[in-house]
Length: 161
Image (cartoon, rainbow, N blue to C red; front, side, top):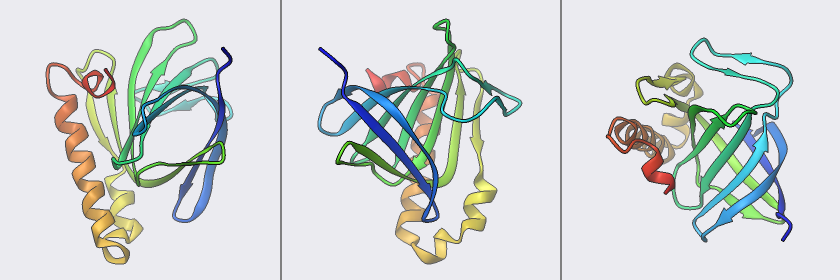
């Protein structure tokens, strides 16, 4: 059986941020999971993790939840951790997974010892709280839920089982 190929299309503030090919791993009707190599050019060093050529992302998008969870693996199969994007619920259509990034992110190291909330300043500056207060409230709830789940003994893996 061949894997279905999809294109992940990530937008932010109405503009294309990135688009990349991915192989569908699973789709239960709500959560769709794909596998894709690191799609950006070169190395991206955040200080707490490096994304680099050879890394593999197993990405989980929900049609009903306001986030995406991305497992980040080295090319050798070692889990680096989870990068979570707060997004509007995914729209899957015509071979594409359409995602709108809402600025808020969460990083969780593979051992769960580091849980970092990211880009809250960008979120505040985005104006979403004024232009779409309901979406802003959903985004904050999503970040809080991910943060809370990451700090449980089962961690984010519990969302993906």
